[in-house]
Image (cartoon, rainbow, N blue to C red; front, side, top):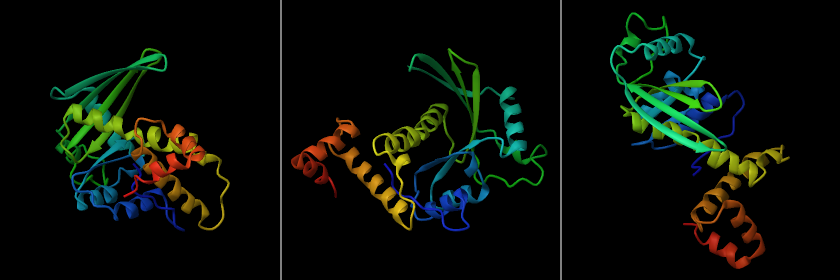
Length: 233
């Protein structure tokens, strides 16, 4: 469910806009996931201050830390907690090996990246090794302030992709958002808000029916449309 959005103001970028949006939310008890661009001290501290925890991908935008974490998982000093999943679909089988450690103090010792901003509240380092039967192993690394068990990390990392699969993909395919030609004034932002409100409503009403079918039936039948709109609270 989409709970908020923010258009980029002049002089803003994705990082500062995300912080401005997060500052409007109460995050108590929430685990906020984000791509590697958000793995920054300011964003992490804001999430902690709002009562939540973060789980960020770690990629080449922090090269020294990435090298250290890669080396750690390649030869860990102690056994790692591991959880494996196997998924089959789209003609392939993918095995994912999720590894976590709560040994993080070494990152801020002599081996730390010189002059690097520290990640506040860091409690877990994690990685996912994904092996498809039609390709090589790919490995992704993560930083989190939550003390996650391997199974909890697996669930959180997988759920992050719902942002793409259950939101952006649906908006593009069912609402043709990428094909929208609105460019002037507040039109793009206002229509984006209406699409997300509509999608939230369609998810709540008649949950067993697919989104595309509910949209069509709402256009064909006033009675069906009223049954959907009646779910608004």
